[in-house]
Length: 288
Image 1 (tube, one colour):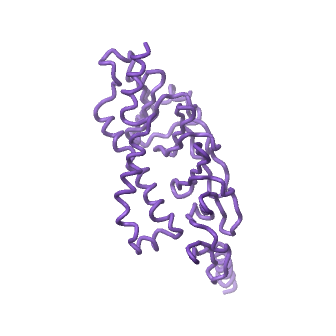
Image 2 (cartoon, rainbow, N blue to C red):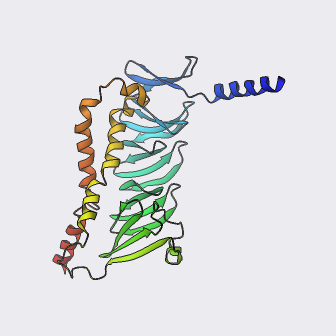
Image 3 (cartoon, rainbow, N blue to C red):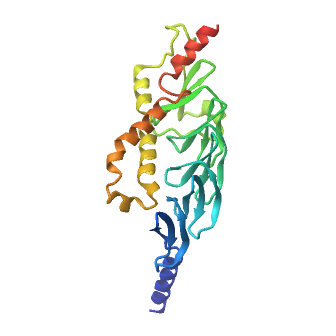
């Protein structure tokens, strides 16, 4: 009986200590309260977006940062754009450069990239100085930023473009592709197949020899990030959890318009959009 009472006491203490704070609104500004109603963070933020289990993306004025459940500022509000990724990462922008942070405010990727996008297999696609690379979820480099384009038409395939040559890395088991940290080990690993898709660019028609299926898949590759960006802008940006905002339905009329804008922006990305291969090959033809 004593053991049971002790277990119940420990459970109660843990639930009290780790209880998530509650968002509240006062005069259009958001703050945090504990379950008892005591104010943890005064209502001073334009937005509070949940980040992981213990953090918040905050907006003060027109600037973004990261705060903990206790109200401690983990990342100063000095960024002009914020985007939540996978619910637990914050992509922050300063000027025209992006960086990636976790819910504890740890800088996973320095604010030094023109784009940071999610890939299959627990990886991020990065772009710096118009060149693409790949890092893992901890920010450790897998492929350096030396490629003209990188994209994944399917979860188990990655296409890389380097100096006019196109290569494909495929998981031989058909599983979602996750590249090892030591990329040199691929050639000796039976779980991966590497193919050279274009050995002599320009031999066909002077255009990029990508199949119609790959183009079709690239056209739709922007759907997922566009959807997540739309949800964050219309729902979580209102400073509350998804359930409460969904019930208000105020976001519904705006959804198709915001979604179309986000999708078009991703689709027309100058360096890795569906027609980037054609443009780069034409440019090469004109300069030769």
